Length: 361
Image 1 (cartoon, rainbow, N blue to C red):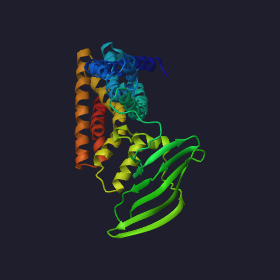
Image 2: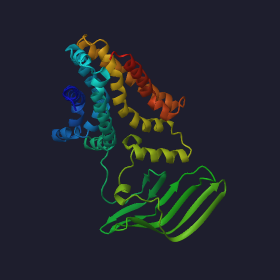
Image 3: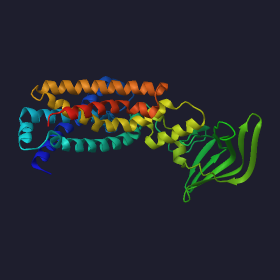
Image 4: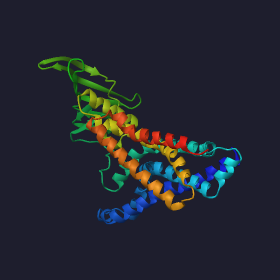
């Protein structure tokens, strides 16, 4: 790595960290100012409120990372232009494309970071909601009242009671149902008197029940059993006691399984498929927006900080607007959900390639 590369990366990192940590801090201050009285009214201590904001960071930082990358690229390139580093580099035979190459590599690293934060954000957000009383804390003890659990695989469990024991757990009168669409993918209903969980083997054993295959109107096949072990029943007793996750609390793979299960049952999943695709499209906007911002910043390098702020704010506004529009278009079915989620990246990517080719090297 040359001296120029280290200098460019140092300038990029300084602005990137300032934006990536500064924007979430402002969001937290605004949120705290707006909702502190509400939190205090619930009897939540100040220490607990402060602790909850640790779980606020993954989601907030993941959302602002593309903006932070844009600010870092625009201000780094703008500074190079104002201080004549670009002129000196070109005079020594180094092209503009070579100068900003480290910025694109750093932006790709931001993509990887954003993908990791996107996976952490759902669980952290759910934990914060529990701490602040927006969501009931998940129970960890036995339950002796009937409850329902929806699994990611499309099964719905109705359980009369679930008792934790030292060697495992026991549930009473479990009924498990997977909704189907017809003879090729029938509805399956499994009912048993009891189910015993063996902790060492991590398996559920059902006893004295029946399995029903609903093939169509007035058509079904039933099998009775004394003992049965179902491969799809993978949830641990602790997982069954926990509240089922909402789609926005699921990671990419979990949401994919949930969408597939809903799709097999005949439900409309276009909106959820767009949400799943956005979990990849938004992080990859980091490198797309860097490709767009670098040549745009060098087009008028002597315009100063006001130009850089204007470029960043305008680009951010258009980018967010396009993501919201693509989300609505994909949910409505006008475009395939996955393609709709990537439309903003395709548009900005095409604009970035055009500006890149037009940039004076």
